[in-house]
Length: 415
Length: 88
Figure 1 (cartoon, rainbow over the protein chains, first blue to last red):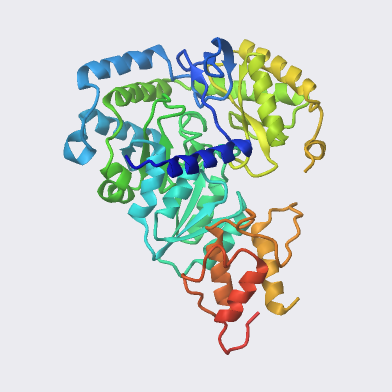
Figure 2: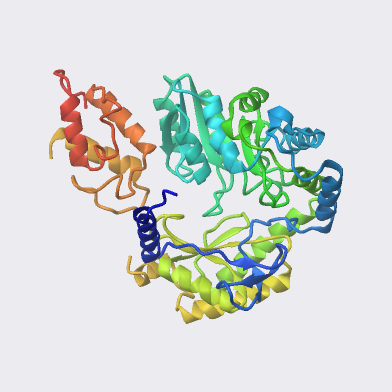
């Protein structure tokens, strides 16, 4: 054993530093399936509390859907629990390929490759498909997993201001000397809930011979008229060169992700993406559940329609109550508080009132941009939202934030 | 403020500050350690300097520390600047 006292002390000092900075994260133990109402043990050892969940990525309410669970059971019975192998040795089942084909149809692409997670898809894609002759130009608010993937790639890295098409155009012009340019964006940005201007991005990509990379994890299944994603919403189906997305949010919420797009890019990932090559794929039970999810959401748009209604209703309730929210169309509705401590206190008080939401602050969002991120689900009924808004109003009143705009809230936070 | 300092400072403000961001950028404002410029965006700053000042900054010298303030960046430019006049 070489974990000497000095090592232990060093790590403990770092952990203490995280606590002192108010950035320490604690898990809350959930004793029920994922749903709009959950049973939570927090802090550890406390009595279990029933509350309304308004912070899950369970957008379509399929995480614990009976038909998905039944399909997963059937998959477990017919294909077993694990594969004990990476895909290219003996870890590919017929249902892996079936799910890839169904995702290709759903996303409107040419081919798809499953990854253990979308984090892995993003971590592996760039290195597999680009090198020092190329340039990656990313929106400055893309997800952390894209940032990590870009770091692993030898292509030149550059960024453009969030959703600033003029700035993106300047960058494309600046990099015309590179062999290829890849524009990188999220579809729905996870912290603000706003959508990429994909139609304008595609127009610029066509003008400057650039490929477009889209992480649609917070959109697949519910954004767009039939839930195909941000590319459907923006009218550019079939024009996105590569889409990465997750099975860990709307599409059943278990785990797994994929790269979907031009068949040559997908094939490059099959040959070279390290998280694909050196890790087991999605377990058979999850593949079986995900196939059922796709069947359910292509049969009807009922769930995404309900989610849309819930999001609009919730936005209206928050605005009427006097909260400062980020405008948008997605089911991610950030309630802006700007102050990190206030966001933490607010979330704690909401929990006491029976509403489970989380405060987000630096480094997850920029300094001075602390918020409560609320997320709607098709599993929410109107009475859940009516209950939640009463809790928000009570806690908002306690902290004196109702009716305050950005300037007043910033002044209150001493920014 | 000399010509290079102004060039660098103006670029940093234009390139990295969002509209409405009224933070003052002085010659000693921490850019990378202060969260104004991220490590990816440093690449565009390096390319800008190389084009505008007709220099080639070696990767070994293009460290986050060397790009952390306008003052340090200007020092780096001077170090790599060749004999030819600056094309501003």
